[in-house]
Amino acid sequence: MGRAGKHPTISDVAERAGVSVPTVSRVLTGAARVSPAKREQVEAAIAELRFRPSAAARVLVSRKSRTIGVITGNTSRYGYAETIRGIEIAARAEGYTVMITVVESPDEDEVDRAVSATLTHALAGVVVLKFDPPGVAALQRLGDELPVVALSGTREAGVPQAVLDEAAAAEELTDHLLGLGHATVHHVRVPPSRRVDGRTTGWKRALRKAHAPVPPVFDATWDPRSGVAIGRALAADPDVTAVFCGNDEIAMGVMRGVAEAGKRVPEDLSVAGFDDHPLAELWSPPLTTAQQDFAGLGGRGFGLLLQAIDGTSDRRYSSERPKLVFRESTAAPKRR
Image 1: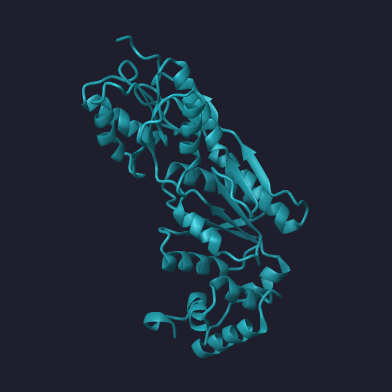
Image 2: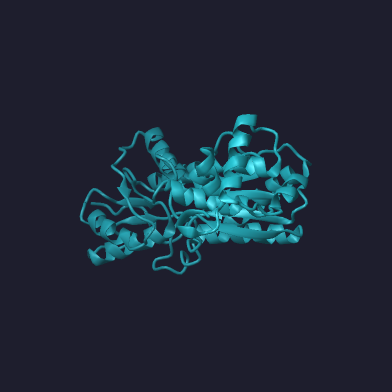
């Protein structure tokens, strides 16, 4: 039996054999890229634990499965949910069903659980939403016995990928604010998937090209309420006239904080977001933002995966640039 008396999993086998989960999966599927020594270790661990692999291995080898796996972070977030919807629509049109596995943190055990849960099913391929550290970690742990496509806002070397060019859109949005006459643009960052995200990169690139000051970054969480205190702090600084937020929900929180501080948007402070959340145009004032086609991203990602599954194309990259949407939350700074 595995941990705590439960039925052993592929993770238990990997731990007992002293190898990775993808290595165990390669042994189970009959893939060739496993050394005889490691194969012997895995087979011994399977026997000791009395692990019973499913029939998924035969399906994986023949690629006759009509199911794809999706590994994702928090599915309640707008971008994640819309991307998954796009994957599901495109997959259903081609006769595939979608199995979703949520990875909640980059913790090694949590990532191992998500990868194990995915690889033990009979899948034709896997799509990874690489929007956050858990997605990045899961992508790194997947082996190469299955076709894998990553979806994100920044390009990842070595794996087929569909992206939304966040850096280019953020640069354009910052340029727009500078063009309105703001001396610089402050930035409220959402948690990045790696050390620096594309939105922050584009913001900084625009300021440097314009020889504008690059202010310190304000870090928010994924909770829109984290933007409220930041909004109050920004409103208290007379040198702040324009703010670019990492997503629309944080921008809404910042605008609430600005209002609580007795200031007005955009008269005292211009605020721009990112994503074009459905509430962005209904907010007061309506929010200037970058429109990200998350559903389209999911569809493009599935298209790359389907080509890899069928062997019909060697295309490995698809990129689309978000479009700017100008609304009433941004304006020229008032004269002093």
